Amino acid sequence: MTLSLYDTMTRKKRAFTPRNEHRVTLYVCGPTVYNYAHIGNFRPVVVFDLLFRVLRDLYGQDAVLYAANVTDVDDKINAKAADEGVPIGVISDRYLAAYNADAAALGALKPTFQPRVTETMEAITAFIADLVAQKAAYAADGHVLFDTQAFPDYGKLSGRPMDEMIAGARVDVAPYKRHPADFVLWKPSKPGEPSWDSAFGPGRPGWHIECTAMIEQALGLPIDIHGGGIDLVFPHHENELAQGVCAGHGHEYADVWMHNGFLNMGDEKMSKSVGNVALAHDLLKTWPGEALRWALLAGHYRQPLEWTGDLIEQAKSALDRLYRVLDDSARFLEGVPTAARASGGEHRGAVEAHDAVLSALRDDLNTPLAFAALFQLADHVRSSTTGKDVAGVERGRSLLLEAGQLMGLLVADPRAWFQGGADDDMKAQVEALIAARGEARAAKDWPAADRIRDELSALKVEVMDGPTGATWRIKEQA
RNA sequence: GGCCUGAUGGCGGAGUGGUGACGUAGCGGACUGCAAAUCCGUGCACCCGGGUUCGAUUCCCGGUCAGGCCUCCA
Figure 1: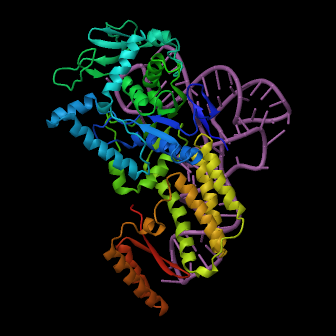
Figure 2: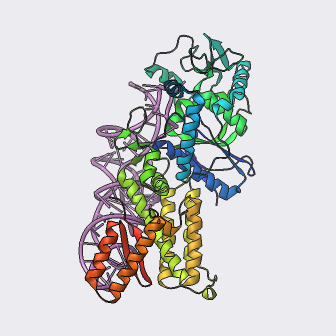
Figure 3: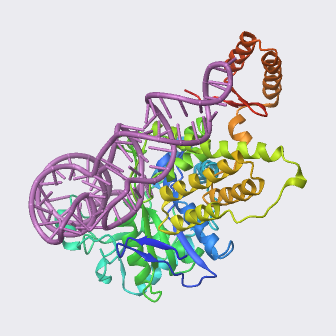
């Protein structure tokens, strides 16, 4: 099975072939750490984490190098640092830690590298110097600018004819630019702002150069896959590409460009600047990270996604269904003597469903199709459990867990998934009530049994009578 | 003004030139002391108008609507 990926540059899905299958390189544009990140920031995090996992599954755990940068030089960081009267590092460290914690809660693996602009200054200034030497950049009015005329293919990635862009532009062009599309590589810092020394004078890097320099430093150019949000195609990635090619790396930058669709809140675009926020940090207080991860993967990554309460609830329900199968089948296996367990049998249906998950993911990360296969696999486990097919349950269960965990899902203990909110005291209390209710039921004292259920209900606990006794779980919040 | 996406059932959301995924919600039934879960059954769609075709939700053209980018928001 080959991996095919949609490439923004060629606008079609292509078979993916890494330059070196022992060293597959992936770079994704990361956050500016000046505040808690909203859930939309985590869509690319989760999407490209999934790609990272699929690549590792295909090429080997250590064969994939994944770099996700952190922008820690930025006006918003400067403003916040000035507000609090602290160095910018205090701000960026604080919110980077929060960001990483949220990403981990959403099931994202740590990238191989997480470069920061402040730790890449030498590479940035060296890169700019290289561009100047190649006559692809020029100094003007204290700035160093990239000369877009030096790159004939400028506009190709985003599919924008440059002359039309300029004709329709609504922005005033800085007078020192030779061409309206030229962009800043290095600029002087304003008084009081952080500044770094360079051959072009003290200042700070422009937006686009940092990614190019970080890629060069962390992975080496060219790379296999470059990813990010669709909104970055122009100008950010277009500019990265221009810089990267003109600095000379065999005139190659990235083989595949991948872009995830936007996350929308209701009908409004979700953006911190608009103030229409849903911080992952807050969402994680009420929802399991796995449910949020599922919700982010509920649609194909290239499609826009509407972020609504319904979406999260449906994601939670879907996971409940899978965890219920895992829980029920685990209880069934606990009741089977070890000696009676066997591992024979083909269980073709389960194997096929497992393979269907893989092939769906390898087809440009078709997560909805992968979810469908996951449910199919769960149905096999369910019917094996009902049919008391021990080998079938064991095989199906391990395939389900394997497929789910490849997607960063089904990582919780099934019982903990349902009883997660309870501490030991509460568990003991619940067990005692359930035992009392069991006695009442045995005596066919239904009013007493129902009274105890009401008590449990008040504790937000739901009891479920089964053939092997009662089980329970924490009820959904309204 | 320029460029680019998308339009599928109550909701979410794949996919396909012809037997209409999957999840969730609805309805009927089984099971259960009741309930939950589970199982069985069932209803529900492919924006509009042309064209190509034996046949289009799927291909082509036009339209409408929605969204994105062109301002260092992923």
